Length: 416
Image (cartoon, rainbow, N blue to C red; front, side):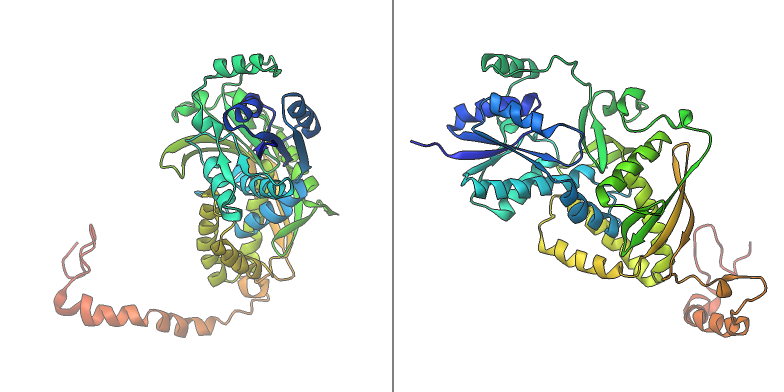
């Protein structure tokens, strides 16, 4: 009698390799592994072959880098989504895409379940599970790491018993996750937020102190809030991010040290490297200052925070997200232009910006010859602007010799 099938998110590491026979034994199911390339720098075909050698009945490997950038990274950049003002959401953006593709594979193979290797403490379990439940609630969700009690040594013994090859490499003291939008690093000595991150915690960026002493400049062109060219050359999303990661990395740009509020209710010290994300977010924000009205920009900051929280909390496939993005897309329709960024000793500094849609007028801003600002109108404007405050002060705050009662600031009739 044929067994039910399960789609397993598979990285080829110790945990997911052990899951292949473990799920088969515990759940009596055939395992189909699913590996996605989001620019993490691994050979997905090699991983696919390993899965087949370790008991998977089938193995699927998919290059989803363009999907990731065009439909997840760029919308988040357009929204200005930085979780708690710092984290560019690299892992958080990748999980809903992987989960969505897994649901598609489950339908293709008539699978009854999906499985992942997330722990019970992290955010990723939420992002996977919520996406699975949203897109197909009929699928059973299996999370072996939340179920088994095996230590690493016990996993190695399990692997040996089932003929699973385990690479004889030294175990990293850190927990690492990466895709082309960023690299995250946690655990080990990083768990003490007082300790400075050691040099071996970084892989994409040089120590800013050891970075070149001469600055490097990059010019990024945006169309409707999306980067379309680098240094004057039209460039698609994936290579544009790859190039900026390399350029920024050699100048030490993109290091983020953050004590983060996880969705599950704990604080976690996270170390991120995201050169391209940092450069692009800074450049994009400066172009928005040039092209958006005051009201549109101020309101956009609230939307950016909601968008970042939504992504971080695993609610990508929600109606609320669709509503927010409609605003974002419309808000970005005039965010076109060129931004020049200076990279030096760990810092990305916007030093120039221009746009045909710019709301900046030199004729109005200048104090030199050619000033077209109506200075005579300023007196009447100021009079009207402060009229409400003046009226209230006379009718209420200063009535009967009363003062404003501000701490450390006596009222006008109370002496000094």
